[in-house]
Length: 428
Figure 1: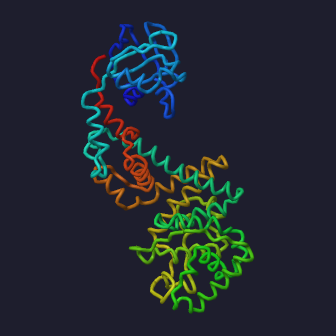
Figure 2: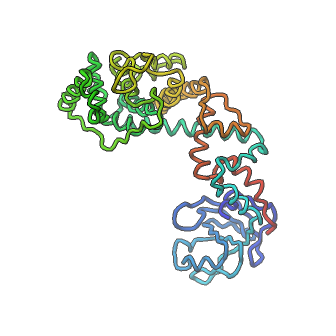
Figure 3: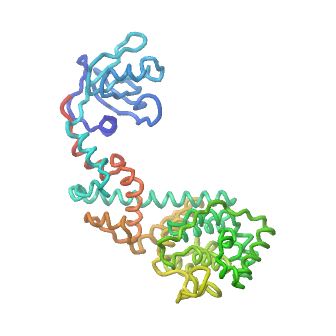
């Protein structure tokens, strides 16, 4: 009933109070998600007289008493009581009758809603209805979701920036570390970066081993070595370097990092990703201080072109050589970093510095990249929705995570459009 009232989904017919006075809804008010009446600051004409105040909605009028509203001052300013069943009049403390109107919902509306949002087996409960909607509604909604997701990532980066006292290099360092976790290990990567100041690492750019020792030590990887790994001269050097760096800079190792390696492809092992981060720092962390000045996607891509050397040139983790390539990141991995680091950093930079051209470049990069290929994207493309670039695939991920999974169909424009077509009400 709140949804129907908020979106004015009743039939465009005369509404009258239970005592016969004509009602015209000028403004249904603002939905209240806290305590108090359901809608604030509504504007209602009753018999031609304009009232401004709050609106309360109940299935049964008698719920007013069972919910204790008659003794709550917050409800004394209610100018209209909207109910489905008029089983009792409602009075103010001074004896005045509160105007009451019956607003019956369509008989099948609640059933349609329940069938859609309470189906635990359906990955996309509206899949069979999407084809019924005009394409403009879907396109417009996906565009909005793409910027919603990009804005959320930018807000995270601006949080890193504020925490770092305005140091863009440190903010990019944390964002890049999180992205190198590739969702599976994003949280522990972020914690390691937050606990390891970039400027202190960069004092040792002439020693890759020192940087690796600091990062591997902060990650806790030097505490869980096999006997063979512990006997390796390189690994022993890492332990020495971490002991020195931790003492010199008073590094505090994050607790309970909970690294995950099960059922993971070797190229995605956190050890190799951490070695990649160390290599970027040893290269004066050019990505962190140059990313905001790139002119296009290819220039941004070159910042992620990293070759691993030494111990990590042909290894995935501590042990015998197994990797055939020294290239730190595959083309598809670079695309993911462009999506999750380059574009959000540029967008955040544009917001913080007031440079709209930077925000525009962020969206151009996403539009120039191929769409991601994962189970979420395939769910939507199976319904016939096209996905031709990363901007659209990011929108689909946002839609899935923020609306489909929590079943917020009423707040999704696709769901709203479908429900609006079904929520036809009987005349009041």
